Length: 222
Image 1 (spheres, helix red, strand yellow):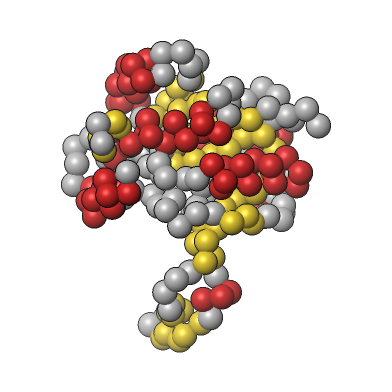
Image 2 (cartoon, rainbow, N blue to C red; image 1 turned 180 degrees about the vertical axis):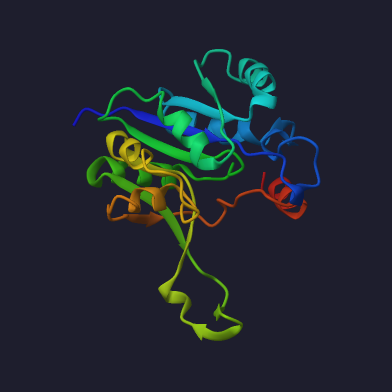
């Protein structure tokens, strides 16, 4: 199968937990916006990767200026995001024309994904049709149902990360379904058409920057 790699970077809204008036992916750490650090990870993996950035309409011009400044030699496409992540990803998938391509979908606010994680996701998806990175649960966890809680084995659970990678024709077909609240990530959308999901090992540093304390961690890590 002759496939080409694509990555859809999904940029969210401002988010109340960040206490910021600008979207978290545009906040600078070590002199560069978070989303720039994120995009650089995928260019390091594959300098010819096709990059699509989904961004809220209010920040489309800002995103285009920023991409032109930091990546003047790259033809990075931007697309207006929807009211939900589901719609934003669907808008990005509409730009993928080759059904045999492999497309990754990644959170803009995850700038610490490792090259190994990216490679594992894309290569496994090329062989099996999809792949999502996961890590072990470090803490003890309890299941709460109707106010009653009980201990469960953390070995039975995994923490899900991105990029989540798919054969383009499969994930485009999955996104033709109506939106459901059950769709918490892109893998659950694919599960909606009864496709099995394949897991690969992620990296623990690959956190999603969501809170001010995450920003402090990011600055220390960089």
